Amino acid sequence: MLAVQQMLQTHPRPVPSESQAHIISCIEACFVCVATCTACANACLYEPNVSDLLTCIRLNNDCADICSATGCLIARQAGYDLDLVKSQVQACITACTVCASECGKHAAMHDHCRVCSDACRQCAAACDLMLDFVPA
Image (tube, rainbow, N blue to C red; front, side):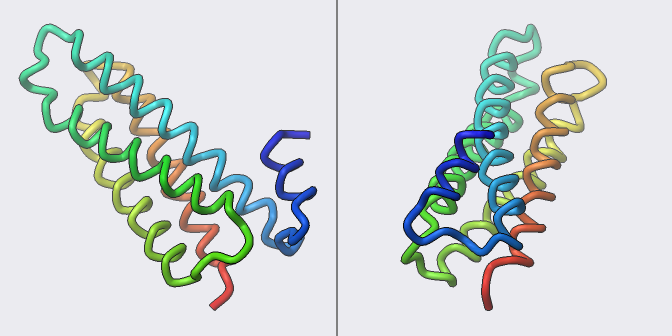
């Protein structure tokens, strides 16, 4: 059993079981995206054409920060403001979509950008699914 799943299940106010899998997927995708975007930005810094990758580096860093905040906010499952959670998750979807698009421009030349683009798209999809399970 994964640590995130264990934490959600052992919380005194557990999330409803029908939404738990989507919440876990979203939290995990956010933190995978943090690590991937951070690593991609670092790899870009060591490419010979670093000046061509400045937008990519910036968006990687922005996306990593937004995904980190989103993952943490979602992990605090009790007592949160629904409007804030929805806004943050939507911001995460936007950041991931923009970052995926930029990394996608460099994917043919840089494998790290391809990997990052895929992770960002997966995070955006997981966040989008999670929004369906946030109470109205």
